[in-house]
Length: 125
Image (cartoon, rainbow, N blue to C red; front, side, top):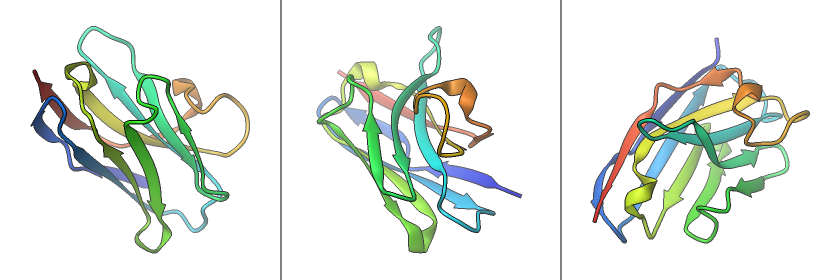
């Protein structure tokens, strides 16, 4: 059974940093995409970053490019999201999700079939 567990959320002041972790269990290969999404109150869930784990190709939304970095540690079955230069508008519940490597755009929420429970990130001004 495939499971994703996020950790690392918290509260920081604007300009600060956090590192989120997504531990994936139940996979016997790395031929999938693991994405980070976020959802703020009253807003739709949006893609933040993703990694094609087989070829280590990252994807970023324009809103976080240059501030967030996605990385993978295959030995630990973990994908990280390093978030620097945090802004109040980054405040949201952050989820990791997994899907196959082909098909729709990396930030298509509906293309992901496995989701974690989410971790809260709060950035104060």
